[in-house]
Length: 83
Image (cartoon, rainbow, N blue to C red; front, side, top):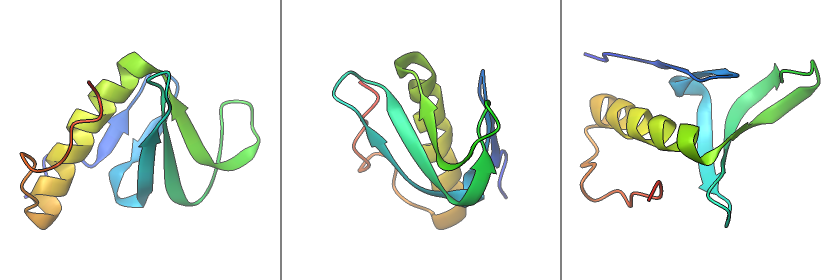
């Protein structure tokens, strides 16, 4: 059973099932690439969502919990990039 499939961020809502991948910048900020296109907060179509460092930690925790519930992935083996 999946307990939460939506990440409610400060400036965005990310449907976990649509996440293609996420990556970390050297400064600690994250971007999440989703399947398809969405409108960003300025109304421009995009498939990237940028998250500041503090919010990316919350997203990564939610993402690992979601992937564990969906695929049974051992989250202990997933590298914690939020540190």
